[in-house]
Image (cartoon, rainbow, N blue to C red; front, side, top):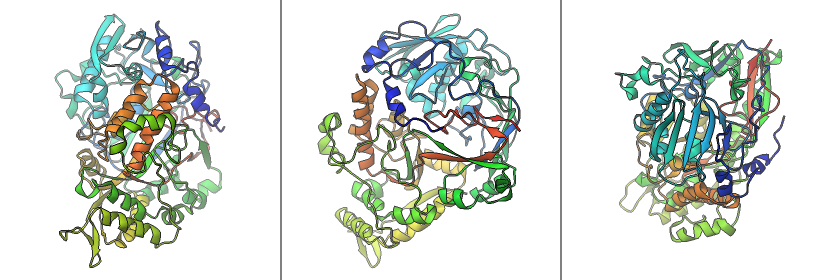
Length: 604
C-alpha cells in the first residue's frame, strides 16, 4: 500500500525532458493533459488507478469539524464557508489525478486541445453534461462562470482571469481561452474552475449570497439539509450525469456525507469515540498511540489506518506579518524563531515523535538542499544577491535547541539578534531606544486546543527575552475577517504545497497581490527574488530548470524567516468505522482532497 518513493519525480518528466517540446505535442483534441509530457492514463482508461469502479453504493460518512459556517457559497469572498463544499458539490471541465504531479482528465469536457505553445486552449463539452436540476451545461454557462468568478468571485479565481485575452464560443459545444502571456500552466488552470448555472443568478447579487442561496452546480452530491453552525448533510444524486465518465467511476459511492460542527477539538473527539462520527484524522502521534483505547476501538468497531504519501511537507506553523513594524526586520523574525523551543515543545506534545518541517518543499525532490546554493539554483539567485536575506545563498537551517526548557543558547541568540535590530531588555522588558516596549498579538481560532498549548509554552519562552504577547482566541468568522484584512501580528498558518507548483505561488508569495484583501500571502512577502523564481518555474524550458527554480524559491522563503515551522506529517493517521473502506492502491498525494470521501465506500 505504500507508494514508491520518488516515483513522483520520475512522473514529473515521463515523456519529455524539455517542456517546450512537451507542450508543442498537444495539437489535437485529447482526453487529458499533463503539465509535462503526456498524461499517464490512456484514452480508454476505465477509472482512476486509486478508485474502485466496482465499489458498492450506500452508507454514510460523518466527520467532526471544529468551527462554524455562515454561508453555503464557496465561490465568493464573503462569509465563512467550510472548505469541503467546493470539493463535494461542483464539477469542472477537467479533473485532477492525485496519482500524477499535475495531470487532468475530462469531466464536463470530453476533450481538450491547445495551440502549439499552449497560447490557447479549447474544450469540447460533453453532450449529456447537466446541472443537478437536470438542465444542460452550456458554453454560455462556462463563459459566464469564468467571467463572474474572475471579477466577483473569491480571490483565488481572479489571478487567472487577468491572464485571459479572449474567451469565446467556437461552436455549440466548444469554448476557447486565448491567453495574454506565455505561461505553460494556464491551459491546465482553464480546466479547473467550477461551472455555475448562469440563469440561477439573473437579478441576484452573486457576491452577497450566504445561507439563503445554494449554488446550482453539477457534482455527484447535493446539499440535502443543514442547520447553521450545527451540520451540513450532502446526499448522493441518484441521477448524477457523470456516473459513467471514466474520471468519475468509483467515486461518489456514499449515499450521505455529513459534516458535524463542534465548538472545540475535545468535543469533536468525544463524538467520534461514541459513534456519532465515523471517521477522524489524528495529527498528534502521542494521542494516536495513547488515547485510542475507548470501547469502540478496542472492540474493533473502529480501525486505525496509517497512510503514506509523497507530498511536500508544505508549511505549518505560526506566521509573522511582515507588514507590521514589529516583524518587518528579518533579525526580529529570526529572534522569534530562536526563542521558539521546538525540541522541548515537540517532546511535550508528541513525545518527540513528529519530525519538524525544515522548508516549504521538504519531504520531496523539490525541497532546498543543505549548505550553500550551487549550480542553477545559485545562478538563478545571483542577480538578487544584494537583497537576499542572509542564509539564502550561504545556506540556512532552523535553530535546534538542547531540548531543555530554558533553551539558553536559543534565548541568547534571540537577544543578540534583537539587540542588532535596536531592541534591548530594560527592567525586564524588551524595549527600543525610545523606551517603547516590544509587544504583539498572537491570533488563534477558538477550539484549537493543541495550538493553544503550543503558544502557552512559547509565551513562557518569550518572557525570558522580556516579551509578553497578547493571545487572542476568536471564532471562525472573526478569524477569517481579521486574516482576510491582515489584521494580525502572528497567527496559525497552514499552506499545503504540491509536486507541481504553479500560478498559485503568486497568490501565496507574490508581491503584486501581497496587499489584496482576502489574499493568501499572509506573511506579506514582497521579494523580487521570490517573484522571479515563480516566473521561472512557470516558463522553464527543462525539467532541471523547473526543479532548480522551486529549490531557489524554497530558499528565499525559508531563509526569509516568515514562519515558525512545527511538525510535518509524512503519513496520515485516519481512524474510521470498520464499515468504511478505501482502495489499497494509494495515490502519490495520499490522503488529500479528492481521496476521502471521494473514493471511499461503505460495506458492512
